Length: 481
Image (cartoon, rainbow, N blue to C red):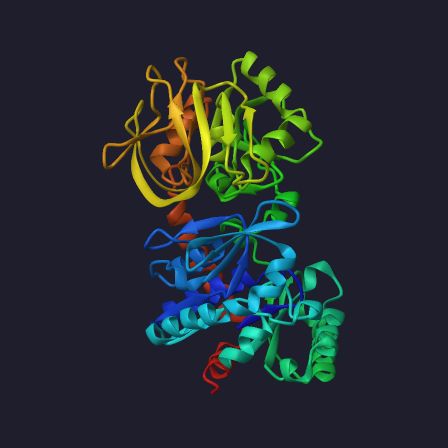
């Protein structure tokens, strides 16, 4: 099990890279994360939801994603409330205090999933959440040491040297841990190192001396990791801007979800993808504005208006710009959004942005499914997935955007072809589909399927880890009883 000295130390990428490394050695490997908190979800086999990182790690293992790989998923809906998903299915909404009091009851579900995976595999790579150093959260823990001790899984601790203070973070974690928890840790990894590793030899030795743990390697800054889908929205705050000529803008809603939809655009050489932070206007030179998915459509529609982005969007449309809404963004582009049962908060009906002749009613049932089909104007194929609540009714005289393989249609496109929306995530992953959207705004696609890009990146990271990690010792730790 890889745990971290803090959030965003690179656990997800390291687990994915090690999964691919050991898979390439011919082992049957499975990823596992007991508890995840993210609005970036994926659809597993059987139409259940899991965290995006575990879906990526399943790709690294060259195996289908299953709900057992992430049995508990928490999707924040507000600063104090979230949706609880167990074994891929919604269990209901809950407050933070309720979850803290009740989370220990989920340990049985977590262990059942872990044991099923262990029976299938030669090796299970487990990812922790946050940090075990958050000892105020230790009671009833199922994400870090609570799981490790219950399942008797040895731990490797990851420290992020790029953020500074890595010696203190590792030694400090050792100092605050309960002795029995600390005894689960068999070694440590230094992650995100830049420069000459010889300069850190003394620091490395100091960590070993002060903790009693064995150093298992110093992992360099893996630039290739930016080609992998991210799970935490924190990465958007430091999103690197590409320098293509065609600007595509995505407003960073407060509950933005499944933002890896736009990763394929970020890699296009002719595109400058701009993730627009709160307090910043939508760029006036944008050719396409995409309203992304969100975990709370009505709240984020109010957030969009509070930023003045509705005014910017109106100006963009007047200038002849293109607009695409995905999932919650699609709902926002309609005439109204109704929440009669208070699914997202207070029971209310609000006016949408009014660009598409649709009306949405939020309902308790959630659609979670993989899908494929064609974009109707071009007949270009797509493969994607849906995760949403709400039923959208469409005026009879409108043009649908997509046709699924079963003949059903989804989405709407305006008569002039400039404003469109749909429920499908992953729309840009297929190169043929992405080329259609880029051609509409005057850009060309590089022709690379996103899945192929991700696969190549995982192999590159696996090779890099093989060079710097004591892989034999890691396997020895994993073999401990």
